[in-house]
Image (cartoon, rainbow, N blue to C red; front, side):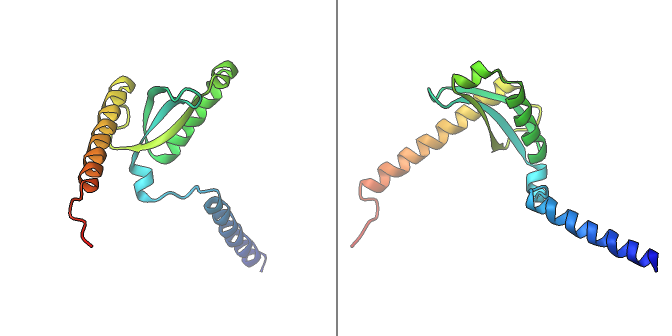
Length: 130
């Protein structure tokens, strides 16, 4: 009988532990664990980009890298407005940060050009009928 109680207690502990992990967001989708993320340095006061500082595979590793950069950041640097954030990317983990910054900037400019073109074509009456 004590073994049954132990087994039930163990099963209960597993269920409760699982709930705590789920509540903390420790369970990731397959996409989140396999996707690449860039850690980007950005100034919230001047809107200046410090560029990509690291490309990491998996959301958990990306969040750890983000915390590492924040932990190593000096208080003066933070006071000046520098922060870090994550962004999902198609780049491979380990890509050189300077190269990743250039590729990301080119993609942002391409998206902006397309959005501008789309907005101009829709505002010029492109197919709008009443």
